[in-house]
Length: 100
Length: 294
Image (cartoon, rainbow over all chains, first blue to last red; front, side):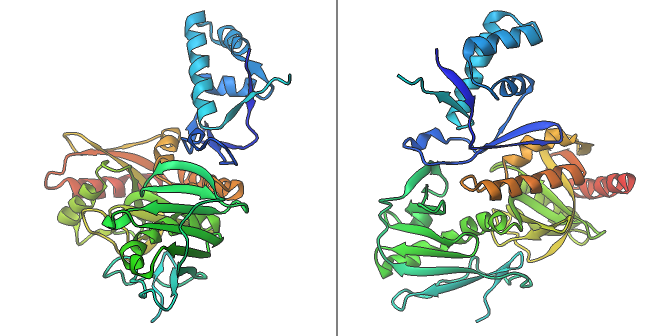
């Protein structure tokens, strides 16, 4: 199971109550990876961002979301997938490559 | 010839002998007062091959590919700017915010290509110098001397707003511009500047004033002004500012300026259609609202 963690190459700033992420462009062999220059997290996103201070996989995050917000599992799983997809695409979270 | 300035920063062009001297920015731009060291741009014949540069983003306007060099400085290769067909040019940073070099394949390419670069260089030079931000916005100065910044992405109605204000309230308000406003941080105070980069209203005034309000426009029937909570301003403002996303420290500064704007400037949404009198409603409503907030 893929695990994810916050990228060190991101500036996070709380402005007027909103958590803003700006991924800092880095050396990458995939130029299409950097597709957004900022991201404002919603309430769910903020909760997931907090969890990603330490590495977590999608089921971990989904469980946490269900506990906190009492949402059904399908909704939580969908939110987590969307969150990870978008934040990975803009470079704010990274997938941890398992060592073999 | 004295170099002309934008928001206090003069542009100095240095061209190799066989390259025609670049014109300045926008015809008719008179330049602002000079308060800062210049941006120096060296124009030269040379390779436009981006080999060895690291791609950062593709598909950004104006038809350019953004790269970073080994020292984490921005480079941009573009083709076909300013209707110049398939000609290519390569912008390299020599000292971020201060010195740049633009290469052309031949000297004859240069006059057809070089004019589009001022805005790109300037919009990143402001945060790289820790001076401010270029906002995709219209702007105007109220009779009280306070500048109002009206951010909006393309098509948001910035030019229409500028035209409406000139038509309805021309003698009372001074329009700074209809497309790009520079917001500088001077100590803890914000200042708004007109820039040469205008849109269809053609307004580009070399004026500046203390920045005192932010207004987003929305199309609707009856003209009315409503306060906007600061948190609603954050994503809307961020969509309109140029952040130097390859440089952590300059990005931190850019967010400092965004934070300063959001937390110190009263924000409003102006709903209107550009019927006669709408501009005056905006001015009067803003004067009332700002008087009420002190």
